[in-house]
Image (cartoon, rainbow, N blue to C red):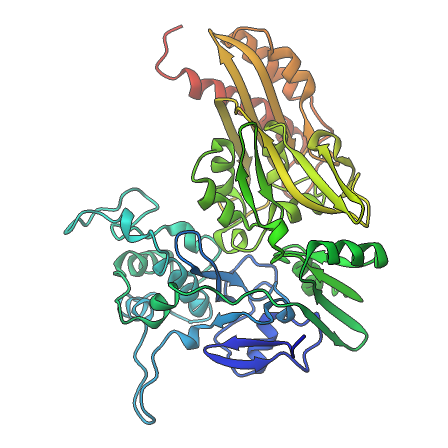
Length: 490
């Protein structure tokens, strides 16, 4: 066990004397790196974005943008962090720094006015700049037209900026800057760094003021600790716990980090199922699966923002038990199950039986979600509909996931997962029964849509009325039917 420290912009920096709950944002600002800003303290504005060296999907290392306002500084023990200040190249004393290509384009194209959000945009943009396969999706040499509305001719994916908000500049010049950056040069030190492995996870025991942050080295050690400390808070990406710390001033005597445990970071495709490690980030899952589970491929772009997906995990999303979590409806439609581990062994629980009440489940305090299993083969007709006030980076009013087997015009199997209409995510069992064995035809779907409107116990709140939620359930099924029959004569 070594002294907890973070490599920030190439310089090792001790975490002490920060308290275990101190965010990476506050840790950096206290050390003079004030480009990292606090805008919302909830991971919604991106002003706090920084780059972290993480295991890569296509190269040994990826530079991943994360919300520094949500991560405890102690969670970065042993890791490498680059802030907006660290992107520029500093020359000899007395000479001006050389701007990073992303910074140059933002300046040249008027991408900053007040500048408050700019460092966060810069870091998120730099993460996409260094994405190894970005240039492979660029337009042919000399092409100037974007591949589509969300990708530039340089292959830049605007989803990389979906977690960054700007209130004064306007997004057009920021998009122009993003679409103007070229490819990293061979001399670029951060591009070269991708060819080496990221720092290996380190065991952490950081104690201050009666609070302790622990990162055990093995799953067995975590499970032993959970049996001894059932009051401990388990964190992976801290995208939920970080909000509790910042907004509700929650504190924990013991926090256990599981985000780097190898046993929770495997993704395997077997003959009869896909197993997804509970501590893989959603971005890692998305890029590793590469569309092999189409329903999840529809879910991921609508799940919060890229900044959140770079830290959030399926284990965390299910572990919170929230009735408006984005992943449960899709996983319910996929007939998924969770693998729960404790010090004595494992058990597999169908997700349909996992939730027992508002933010409650069958998981015991000494158990940990190790993995999520999705059975194969997959249903061919799928859709994920998330109804929100804005397209990205928002909490759903209603979420509906469909997975249907339709053979010879007959619905052989139907699975429908719902979120936001009850105290827990639920299956629309009555609708599934109304569809199965029936022709996939307008009359069947309209009757089933009326039943779907009655599912759950939707409530009135600031996001939507109960009546609106019910109406959207029925409309979601009608929308799916319209999509599957478009261009087909009746």
